[in-house]
Length: 172
Image 1 (cartoon, rainbow, N blue to C red):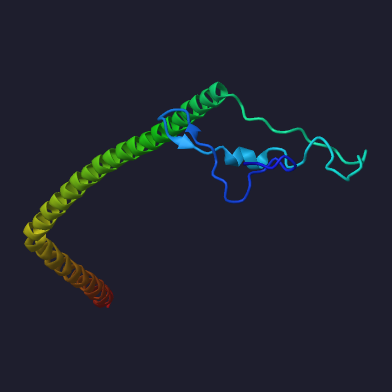
Image 2: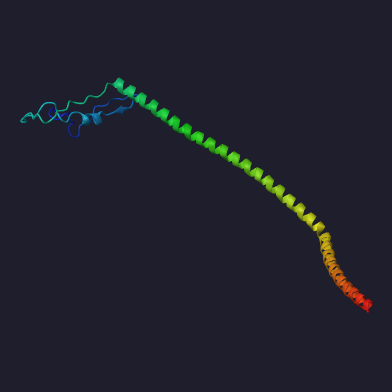
């Protein structure tokens, strides 16, 4: 399967199948096999050891129990995260619902106020229409009083002239 010199699978080779954690599905270990030491800890034939080049150790797959534990931890943390996200979204929708209810109540109050204002305006218009003949009479009386006042001033002026003439005639 893998050549001894490279530690990589041969071209066209099938990965060994084994049972994965959880549902019993099979999976191939090649993602990890590809990461395993392409760089060997020992030099290849014909190569001298260079002290400036670091060598890597072969990566080892974690034990299956560790993978199961890590998967369980990942799933529980993902479930906690998603639960938090869904709870926050649910709370946002509840807040919007409450705001919509309050807004609806406010609009109903404003509607009632507008209806009352409209009713009062109609009543005032009816009362004004009922008072209109009296207001016209008041305006007519006011005009007559103004004319009478002018006549009184003219009469007063004429009586003063007449009195002055009478006194003038009396003196003679």
